[in-house]
Amino acid sequence: MGTTQPAAPRAVLVVGASSGIGLAVAQQLSERGDRLVLFARDQGRLRQVADALPGPVEVVAGDVADADAVERAVAACVAAYGRCDAAISTAQAMAYGTVESLPPDVLRHLVDVAVGGTGNLARSLLPRFREQGGGHLVVVSSLLAEIAVPSMGGYCAAKWGQLGLVRTLQAEVRRERGVHVSVVLPGAVDTPIYRQAATYAGRLGSAPPPVVAPGRVAQACLRRLDRPRRLDHVGPANLPAVAAFRTVPALYERLAGPLVDRVVLRGPRSEDHAGNVLEPVPAAEGLRGGWTTGGRLRGRTGRARWRG
Image 1 (cartoon, rainbow, N blue to C red):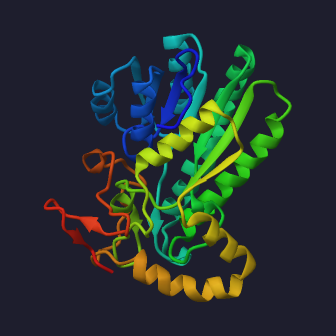
Image 2: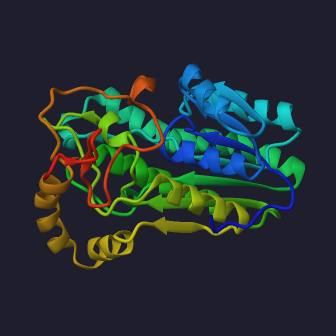
């Protein structure tokens, strides 16, 4: 797995643990002996995940955008294990559509999850970290925290705000002994989020290539937990994309729209809907979304579909 085994099991809160990257994080932490509290919106789905894990697990249902729910989750970790050594936050909400097409409540909740949720975690965790002499918050954000993508403006805004908040937190705790804040920025990941996303673009979205496995992002989270570092990119296209966005912005903007049409908005036509942004859809959750490395969606027979 490429991570260092901790000297003693940690007590870790995993936010967004019911699906995708969060589920992969929970699996890897539990397999190495860490004690977990799983936090996501649907109690039944969390119970399914917990029952499949080998180690000690507690579950708390709630929305990361709800400060009281986050406080309950952190308190549950302390009550169950005597401390909360770390939290790994993977909660995500995604929507496709131009900025003007996104309903206000959808745009607001994207920001509430990414920015408000991270703030809620910091508010509940940092006092505990100080009391116990240390702790680590690892936030999974996105490549889109450092670039802009047409028809994903709401998601970009949420992720830019989240990264700004995390980098500010890092500056604020830098002199506090044993307290760490890290951010992991993955590119496209093979999770169910693309089919669960809201869409106001007339089509369902796809995972743009190159697509990495959720386990790879989980490994990056565990590495940061074991060896603290401020920022970690995951995905071969990340650094070239950021460089192009920063150094040749006019060319980037000229190419971005056609690329989005070709590799992002290439799913079946769809009526506008809010996906799982405002309410969970537990039946659609799971570890992987079925995307190939090249960004194609595999069917039950293994054949690639949704060819751009």
